[in-house]
Image (tube, rainbow, N blue to C red):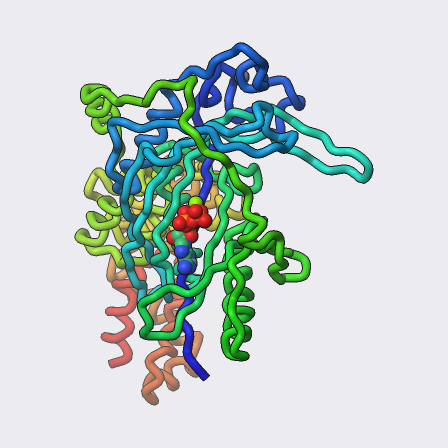
Length: 480
Ligand code: ADP
Ligand code: MG
Ligand code: ZN
């Protein structure tokens, strides 16, 4: 049997988080919180005699997105009309960029694979263009409803090159697009709210062959997990067809998330003719050099650069990835370590295991963390300097999470100090040895782990205040 290689390309729509819609002053992104058809005006409702006016906010976000995607920003771009007839499209056409998009070719770098063996790969971006969104229709049993609040919202469509070779790479690509768009504030990319929508194109070709095979396009994907599942299914479906000597039809298919299968929607022959033509009501979009310079100057440091810095300072690729999974997390991490008194590794461990775990459990974002970065820094400084033990540090962490007190206040209130005084430690060690002859015997028979029970004994006697490092040394001395 021939071995096949998947070839995958993604078309992603992200809703830009601008204040207004693309061509009118209606508030953008009012979403589910607003009553239907309240953020509308004659322009986005397509009334006769009105004209679209380009809004600056959306263009600015499109350019920020383009810069994050390493796209060649086009100082001159144009708009076209794409026609189809459906109640969600008030004008009977959508204003979109067709042959001259605002963002030309670019690329991103994706990371995928197991934690201890992460792979990186460059994925090309064909282009990313601006367009207006359609309304949202919902279908009831005998009628349909249309909410025009979303009609005319700005979308950026990001079209990848067919550079992806597996469902995992596609998943990693989506994750990276989302991280970048959120990072530069272009879009929130909440898929549940429809702020990110994705269509996937997939074909197979015999391994080693250069020419691409015939592709299917899959729509109706509403989670990253769904994308992965749909691709796995589609690879199996196309493999079977090809192995049986058949040919894959070029068609659009729909993902059924209940049955976990793709189903045919329309074939190439039924492809819609959109009758594209240049939009006569909008002049070309021309970006001034000075404006572009200002937008570039306002760009934050991008995640790839932060990741590289964190790794140069000694963090693993995995840790650097987690700590740059959002701009807010990376800012928090840098705020904790900025004094230079807390090592990157310590801050990384506490943020990943303690802080992010609890935030996740309570469904909170790091911006809403009950422990602000300067508080965690104070706590970790006490742990690093040996003022309190790691274990005590964990207790203080839990307490300040609940009460919002300062770490110093909790340490003071609870009389926490770490005891490093050797005479005192030796006294506790001797008591622990006397109380646990079995552990001593095991240790002397060569079971070095038995020392854990003895240190545990000291911790009990010292109420957790004994310095574990010095304890280890004392036990080695006493037991030989
Ligand atoms: P269309 O005009 O049908 O939208 P495009 O050329 O714009 O087609 O490509 C749409 C997407 O499909 C892009 O992301 C591209 O990378 C991907 N693509 C194109 N050809 C193939 C192929 N043979 N197999 C898989 N994906 C493909
Ligand atoms: Mg296309
Ligand atoms: Zn409007």
